[in-house]
Each structure stands twice: as C-alpha cells, then as structure tokens.
Amino acid sequence: ATGTDKFRLRAEDDGTLSSTELNGTIKHRTLPIANVMAYGAVGDGVTDDSDAFLAAIAAGAGETFVPIGTFLISESLFLTYGQSIVGASKTGSVIEMATDNIPIIVCNGHSMQVSNLKLRYSNQQENTDTHAIAISLGHTSAGDAEGGCHESTFSHLIIEKAYNGFALPVWAGTPFAFGCVFDDIRILDHAEFAVRIEPAGGEPTTLTFRNVYALGQAN
Image (cartoon, rainbow, N blue to C red; front, side, top):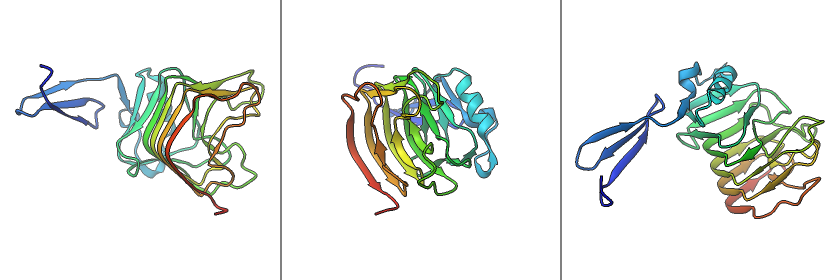
C-alpha cells in the first residue's frame, strides 16, 4: 500500500476488521477485538448477557465489540487501563442494565474508550438511586482509597434513565478525572445531573465537552 491508496473499513460480526481497497482487492486484518457474541451474548433484550460481557472484557483483547442488538446485563462492567467498549451504532448497539442503583460501566484508569453505544436502565432511576451512574469515572465501592479516570474518550453515546449520566463516585474515597473528552452525547431522563464531577479530592482538569445534550426528568 502507498500513501495514496484508499480503503473502506468495516467491523465484522466475528470481531475482525475488513479493509477493502477501492480497486477491488480485499484484505483482512484481525485486530485485538473481543466480540461479545463470540462469548455467548444473545442480544435479544431478554437473555442476561452479563457473563458474556464479563468474559469478553476479561479475555484481555483490549477492545470489546458490541454489535447491533439489545444486550441485557445485571452486573456492572469494569474497564481499566487501555480497555474499550465500542458498539456498531449509538442507536442500534444497546446495553440495558436490569439492576437498579448500580453503574452500567465503571472506568478506572487511563486510555479507555466507550463509544457508539446506547446505555440505558430497564427502570427509570430515581433520586434515591444515587449509585445508578451510567458511566462511573472511578471506583464505586466504599472503602476504596482512590481511583479515577484520565486521558479517556467517551463519544457517540445515548444515555437513558440513569441517576447521573457521568459522575465521580464521591462515596468511594477521593476519585479524580482529568484529560478526558466527551463528544456527541445525548443524556436523557436522568434523575439528577447529566454530568456530576465534584471530586472529594483532586480537582478535575482539562475535561473537554463537545456536542453534549441533556434533558432530565425535571425539564
């Protein structure tokens, strides 16, 4: 390939990335991607796919891929250094949390990515469901000394029916956030704030927000 060659890229259901040269030559390169379907996820909106998601993340591929479908889970998904959860479409790749008052995704570390997904709770979270953070930026267990999220990207997301869309879990020690980018995000029907970053310890710095739209229950 030369600097002037052009390619069309497409994520396949088996977790590979297809690259097609515009002259018709097809090449395939398998990236370190764990497709949740390969770990037993069903994506029918009824089956609990928690084990499949946990296994895909634990496989250590780096990126967990969520194809089109509604994937019901009942446990929080934990990401750490360099890990990502990426969907095929922010309207078609849906992760639905069936358990009230827990985060959907917990990001604790750096260089993480969550993108191209719809994250929603099965039930509307209320003002008493203070741990129902769609994406928690740090630890969420009381007693953890510290934790946080930095140099990570959150983009092309729809979040529905959470207590907070994004938040630092201030009940968990002294979490922090810095160097993160939030881009093209819709946060709908949240019970409290769409984004709540009020650290108990260090101040958040260099957080970038672009095209973030919020419409809560009170609006």
